[in-house]
Image 1 (cartoon, helix red, strand yellow):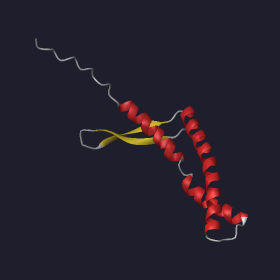
Image 2 (cartoon, one colour; image 1 turned 45 degrees about the vertical axis):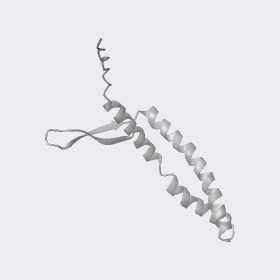
Image 3 (spheres, helix red, strand yellow; image 1 turned 120 degrees about the vertical axis):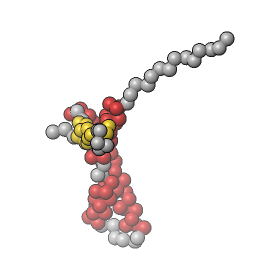
Image 4 (cartoon, one colour; image 1 turned 30 degrees about the horizontal axis):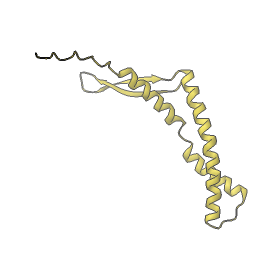
Length: 112
């Protein structure tokens, strides 16, 4: 099942918005997952570096398991963005679908 997100559309006669569901195609969803995977690998490396820096800064023993535990805590917080990226892609699709083509204004007549 592909990722989807609801956005408020134009208001109905009663003033309440009509919610519109936006779906990602399988290709779009896969692209966001690939993006998240690459980002997560980079984040995990940063988290391991940051965890090592924390242990050194606080004069803690640099046990590998402690560094990994700190890194995982940091990673859990930072890596939760895959849903955010998918939702952002849905929002882009929603906004593009709602864009109205800009009317071309006729040139103003010059007064002679």
